[in-house]
Image (cartoon, rainbow, N blue to C red; front, top):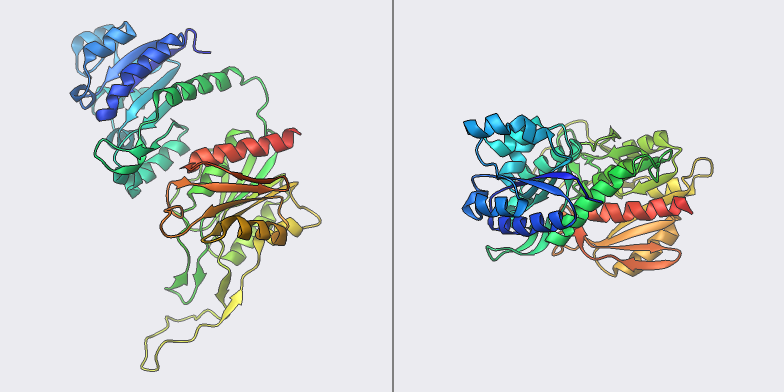
Length: 405
């Protein structure tokens, strides 16, 4: 599916830059016409000559080369491609993309382009997990940038975790899938005409005007699912508790704070064809919220009287008038995950439940990866650990298959 496709590959800095050479060769083998742009950081690891030798064309490096600007300016480089592929994409390069900076050839091309962009991140574990990087990722996703990876594994620095550049085969498959989907745009998207409801994030239950009870949910998995369902053609309403995330492109986000507010927003979003209830809703709230800040006194710790919050998942699943034809719940467990989640599916009355182990040592809650078990009336499927976007895409494919039948 790549015959004659024009790909501009932008090679960022980092030891992973060596994979770009094999990536060029594999893309060429698939019939693509590849042009290379090497950043200053990338040139510390591979040479412009090696890139040019594999692409069969000049490798571009300098924004202010008068010869290059006369023969092939940065505007032409940004426009004369079917896809711009950034591999590896460093934290610095993604920060420039997210914030519209353009102080070298690569960032200028990326800001000037009107063509699709795919990035393959590669960086240290802590750099990928840093809040600034994750904010930039969310901005880029909302801007419509395609991502492949990163993957989990051993880094060149010796640390282990999420941040490795995807394998060459994975990146080639992602590019091929992009062109396959693009060439099939005339066919209707699998969830076109369907309405989807997704809940995400934590709820905050007030104690007084300055304090509240909450949990560690980041909302990342729910936002990724909302983005995936929208990409599959669904009309998506995302009911979100408090998060620092940017609403995915094409998604209608409704912001709430408490469980009671979330229930009201969910009711307003119905009817829907599918509901994916990812939010980590607090089980309890205070029966009486203080209107003034509770002061520390010599009488000791104040007594807090709790009452049960509404069970939003159970209410949606039990609705007789506007129940979605597919209700998917989530079960965050710390022990006996399969048994507890299976019992929860029966108790709540949902069709599917997605279970995960959120014990403190897993790093799942609030993290970037997830390891889940999908439980249906057909049994349980254990999915390999993957980044939350990959989990959302796998779940989205399952949902699309459900409506296909």
